[in-house]
Image (cartoon, rainbow, N blue to C red):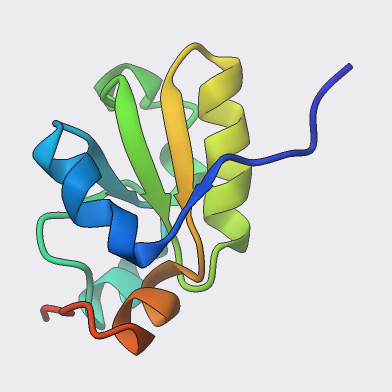
Length: 103
């Protein structure tokens, strides 16, 4: 049976994961990405994830605006053998906790 649980990390966990080699994977739309993003994030819109799976690193922190779309991508990537976690609260949660956003 498919598990509905999504591994989630808090914004405070992200710097340590990135230091360990994890990639921030931002799955928002091009327009959202252009409006601001977490420094160092890689952009791959959600609707392109399936077709570009081979481009996705083995360990990723999935990010969207608030965490819904990235949770779906996290589940998909984990089902395909990647080690993926979802950023709780997305870019909004990141910014609310003082995380930098770049244009």
